[in-house]
Length: 241
Image: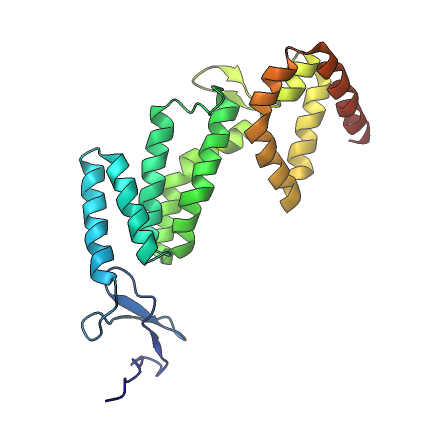
């Protein structure tokens, strides 16, 4: 007997059943009305993915984040666009970041490093969860990450870090000019926020800079020759802004 198409009772369109969620719901390709289809068809891997999700959430509740990460990754091999698994990975990795004090692999810490680590975790996991989630759940995810996003943005602006009472900003420029609040560093921060941040390539450069600058600043600080060379290069940029 030939397979019959699942038809939407609202508009008559086909129901997309090859990408149902873990609760068995598919959507009409045209009007987006949700329908529960798991009761009438069998989707390979779905029961396994759902049972893995339950086990992963139990592991998180028990504080076993390492096991939860393994389970969430296993879910993604079955259903790569499972927003629950991506969000679970974000929750676990954000907890790891906090546990290790937002310290990078070079031993750097501080507001700038913390902001970069937060950004990496958001981009790698949270944003994917938001991309794949239904609108109402995606909105909940956005509200959950708002505090992290606000912190990252405050660091980009060079605001004071409330906990450490220290300023954040351009690591390399601060090392080269010897002061966070000097006119040269202020001009570079302004160039970052008012020009670079407006363009995709500029935002990519900012993210890359935040990733490598703490390590490079430490090296430059111990090299007068490097300081002199970079100061000349930054001077050319400042003249143009």
